[in-house]
Amino acid sequence: MTDDRESESPLLFLDVDGTLLPYGGARLPTGADGWDEWQDTGNPQLAKIDRAHGPRLLALPCALMWATAWMADANVVIAPLLGLPQLPVVELPDAPEDDEVGGLHWKTRALVDLAAGRAFVWVDDEITDLDRAWVAGHHPGRALLHRVDAMIGLADTDFVVLDHWLRDVSAQGDAYGHTPTPRPS
Image 1 (cartoon, rainbow, N blue to C red):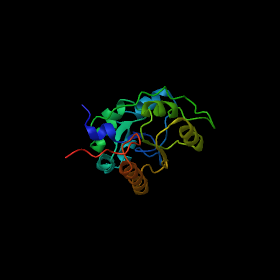
Image 2 (cartoon, helix red, strand yellow; image 1 turned 60 degrees about the vertical axis):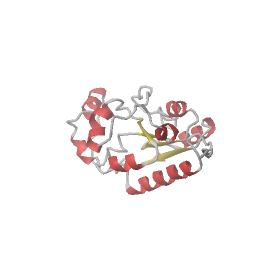
Image 3 (tube, helix red, strand yellow; image 1 turned 90 degrees about the vertical axis):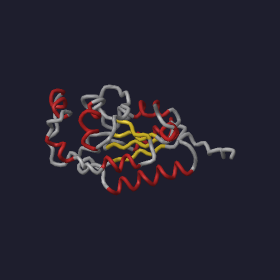
Image 4 (cartoon, rainbow, N blue to C red; image 1 turned 135 degrees about the vertical axis):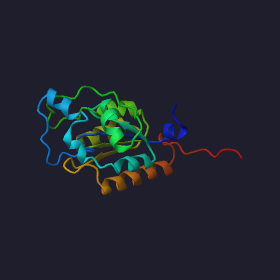
């Protein structure tokens, strides 16, 4: 069951590769079999995950959701490393084998559809200005598309931006832009 705080909070769509799991110095997989090994608890790159990110993510005033090609594997491999509970997983279309240069990101439409007008943050290392423009034209609520440096992943400065934006949205009303109505005493 979801508590009232989560049902009224902005969503935070969270990527893994390049965001929580920095690429710096890694040999990235080249085929489907390589990605299966990458998304396994035996991946030595997992040592690069900053375990302090878990408590920092949980402290943000939002409802966390995985928005990653890892899909449910994020709850099996990444969540325990960060001390996160099992998070909802966004049903995404299959990731393309080769990203279209200059095209809309493969996650963008799905995230806007799921948000359904609710305020959201999308944290990813592949966000472009085209994604931002498309969201601005197709999403009636507030949205922050926050790009992370894939070589270093989430950093202190990223958390400052996320926290400030989320608290600003919360101060202005619920996640749909409604101003709270005072409750009778």
